[in-house]
Length: 375
Image 1 (cartoon, rainbow, N blue to C red):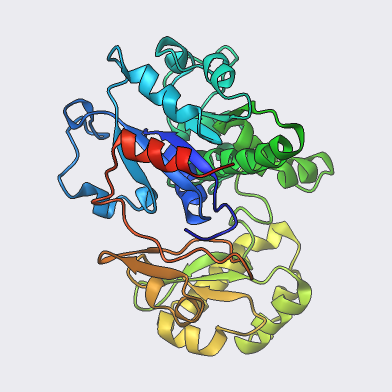
Image 2: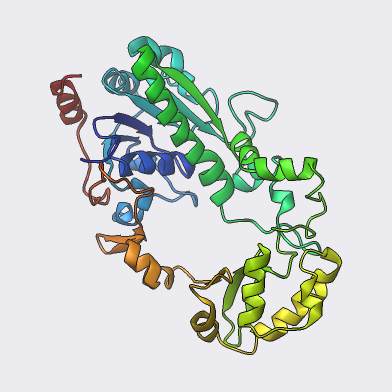
């Protein structure tokens, strides 16, 4: 392996959503990530059915990892995991609070076995608080952060932002950041610690800028009336003649001026850029303007200029965009097109990854490798 986390050993207790994504980020950066999975007969997907035989080929978040199968409910299961814990640097888990303790694998037990262990816990509500034991998903966790209610148009319900904000941004990435911080601290102190990563906390933190703007009086609690929520005519998406969309983000006056110049708009009404009362009418007029040409035509005119423009691409189109191609933003592994590791490093460049298909390992082999490499 290569990458900035080369030599770091991670145990990932297999789950869904943010835990595997965090593990993928660590594996992308060169960590040796071992997924502790349940026997296939006891494993099921979101729909309750067992995964397909070749499902790991399409499980992008499992790339670069190896898998050991352990029945955690068996008498030997906890002992086998603890044998791995003794040699690991990091353990990440995404079970409901108390589950790992009931399995005999809680933080106290694991840190007693390995005092340097970084023990990362990923949940929606957190390890404490009145909702800690409640079931939930991304849409629930982002709701109490104030961020979900800030999204969308005034006359519509807030639109679910996929599960990018809670599961992945406020959850997995926060846990990965916490793991990286704790590893640095452990190198100095020689001691591990527990990370309580809650999606509610992480999503609230993602909203730091907006809470600051609200305190200053520059952001309204009324959805659909703010600079970045799609209310402004110069920060929104527009339909084109072919039914496809473009995105405009010309916030700064000089960029807004460049947009108007390239659109050949000279009407003085558009000079009132930051007057919210004019936004609905100016948006209506811009919409009528953009629908006269196709997305390709607007892209030819505006892409790469200071008008702050981009075509709105789907997941088939994005890997083919010339900028993404030039930066190798997407890669192909075992015939599956997927995003490449990010961010980029100048020296410790991660190697090309493999899918997790066919990467099953035995407990004995992993322990043998880890014990053979001196610390």
